Length: 593
Image (cartoon, rainbow, N blue to C red):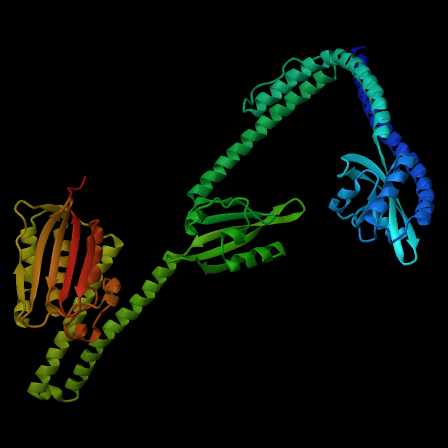
């Protein structure tokens, strides 16, 4: 019984809506229809009067009349007809108007563009319903055309629609009264129906709002014995299922976000031409400042190769890869892989993964350069040793002077090979981390004396003055003595080699905050500014010929740089060609934790 009554309530409510809607529709339609019919009747009546008026004006009006004569005729006809009568030339000039004094006619605006005038000139008759700016009323205009020889005159009748509006106002009052009465009755009936239905619907609405606000555990629980009760049960089941799916989706999203955050590779997901996902690694690769989501790839990443790869994947290819370089000063080499993103109806987008291969390419280039440089460095002494040995075997061994000279050459080149091998081993240990500093307390004065002693003989042979500037009293620091001694020795050795006889090389130390700074300066040939950024590279020489003549391996400054970095420090250089160079070896002074 309740189920049947519930259906009746809904049907009654539906009928009520239909009745109210019908009343509104009928009232609107009736007013418009009645207004249209009344205007049509007025127009038919005025059409007959225009025909009569054309004959009267054709008989009485003359083209050579003055403005006052034409206006007098318009006033006369307007009084007789009880309508507004206007005479208009084809050019739009008003010659007479029954509602406007003759002296004001020249001030009227041109009527050539009035719809009824245009229509009369084209078809001999015209009609228009519009607002008159002259009289401030809605008027119905009908026009006719009078022709006298080559002269034409448009005559226009105008009737205010006040009578139509008054009649419509009466009908409108009746319709409004009937609609209000019907509305009050409908509201009463609707209220009675709504009381039965609104409570459970309101409870269901509140529950839905709480769930939408994030309280996913809230349920309706109370189910009326009608369709609303069944809706409530279905709603609770739907909420349970939705909560379960949201939890699953949240867990999947959290896992995905964690994976994407942890990835070093950049990930870009495009769906229907727009970016829907971009991880932090991608933003760092391309220095993205604005959020790229929702934008097109062309707006965010200026990579023509990527756009071409996306197009190829969307057209059917399963995998497209390419290598490219990012823009900017710190350009990165990227290896990009693009695969399709499946969806309903086929491929809806693509996934692009960006691998930063800059370090790999740099390492490969370093390896190639290293092999080439080592081969080149080994070739010269080996060639000299072989040539000397062959010369000795060819008979020079029986000539004491020549034999001694070639033996000394073999000894000198063998020493060069030994120095090269030792420097390569030292550099390899530093780069591999095997030479991690064994920190101990170091007295700078002892370290400086040892480094200066290592180059004292070479300095004396070249006539170079060595200057040892004592460190401040009480200055000590922690580091690997052997690595730092080798680094200072290498710096002093370069200072001695590249300073002309009679010059000076000095070693000093100072404390700067939490750092100890060793300064090696000389009065040598100096270094051009263009070479300064590269002098710490392996085998890089400013003057290759002189370096080899002086027995350099091209690895000394590279060892200095790696020793400084192993201690968490750095090495800096300043130089003026012809005036000398200054190297600063900067080492943290703190005790290791």
